[in-house]
Image 1 (cartoon, rainbow, N blue to C red):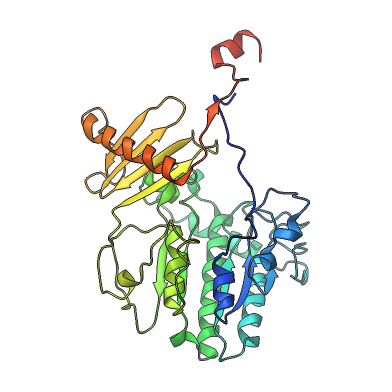
Image 2 (image 1 turned 90 degrees about the horizontal axis):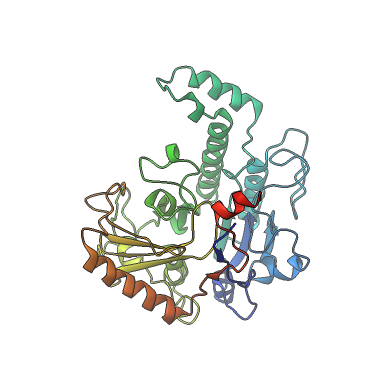
Length: 371
């Protein structure tokens, strides 16, 4: 039923591409991966040729092509994950992965720098939590003055607690080992919430073009460099991590590898409050929760182009952070100016575009044909 055909893109990283862990490893870092890899289609026969150890990590604990736990017990033992022991009945995946991360920290030579890349599976589905936490939050939910009780999910709350506890355990281990003052900690997410009630009032959620889908938590602890409790309003994006972390490590940049990002070290150190860059781009040429789209943010203005019908949405995020008023009709010149820039960017980077689906059957025709 899709009106457009999705481009046939490469669903794995090419080995000739030098990615972040490889660059840090070349700089003398020990590198370890824990958790969710998910950089190939599920069931890919050549997964072992593209697992984390083939892209710069010394060890891989739990990383598969999976986007969520698919072992026999899902979040509970047995896990069925690479290099992660199944423990005992009732053991929870988040805890076991954190145990393994703590073991790595304890075993790492104190003088050797390290990259501990931890991509927790939680809070991805299936939504599961230890029974005692589910009971705890069922009881707590009874105290909520919330008429929409369907939004209360005790198991999800339990997963959040487990995640919080695990991050706390890692921070405590850094303190115990005397590493906390010489270790950068970056905490972020890979998308917005998973339903409207989980995005703090922003519009939409995971997968969507609106702010509830693309804004994420982002916290950096860099002792001696970033002032505790400080904040910055400058928009940054995931592709900025690579050049930023190289500069943090005192390693030379690799502009051919991280050409889409810029180092945000000046923001983190308080040297600057803005970047020279004023524009961010998104390209979403497939169907997942939302219709295919492209987007551009320039300053406070954000334009979204929906590929199926060319529909445009224009928002002033400073005045309207919840994206409630589409300004495209009221300001057509600005909308067209940003659209031209978005299309030019797609051409410059060689972005794969969608084409008409020759097998598309419009809904009314499909109904007449009984499909």
